Image 1: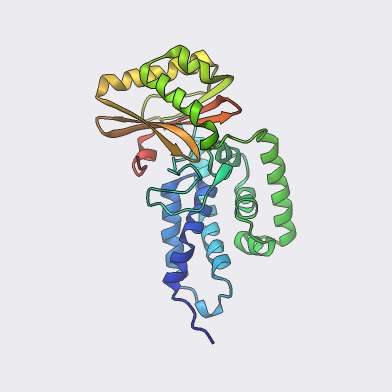
Image 2: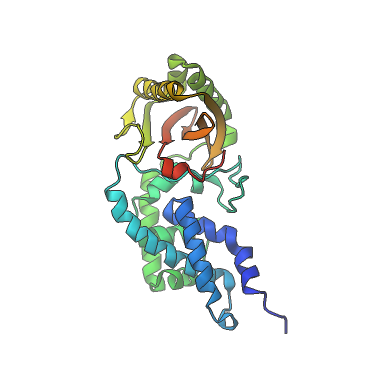
Length: 296
């Protein structure tokens, strides 16, 4: 009979998956890391000889912990000042993390656009959808994770799928597909070229800014190329008065992003959503509480 792996080794082996589940449910790197810490402590107290499938059992622990955090977060987000955006997660061109945060998220699942769609789901729907559609867990495993019957889980997933598909009309371009647009966007932003910026923005482009009430940004969505371009350049101009700007291109949540540092301190991560050949949405995270742990 083969010896069972050490519980700590088992947790480490599945950590990337577990972080990804927590982040998809919560949209917060900090909260996901907290969930993993709590889940590890719970895993240490389990009678491991009775665990047949460590992956499914660990996913159950993390999902239940994340659901508890999410239900509390829903009430906090109702009082949030201005638009709420997910905490930026650095990825490379295919979705992997080069910054030491171990995760397995790839493709559209990690985009800000998708995470905002998931915000419209109930906590239970979101957990079920994430486990089934993103990570392909079996229905019995999901039922155990969320404490519902298999029939109820199937119904929750169907409702979540219907809601997601109604809001997700076309896929967001990958970083490879959107590189040329992203480079033009960065050049126009860095040089203050209003027309150049407008040229890459779609007619119905939407700007969402997350300052959390702590720093300046738009408190409501801003729509239209002219308004969005002037808002973006206005924010950069204000930053230039505060210190030396360092503007660079990065990839966060599977999308090209303009990263702005002022005197070496991260000021904003502005991700661009490209569909077709134009920028359809701009997501600007300036809330310093969401930038503390972001790698550049």
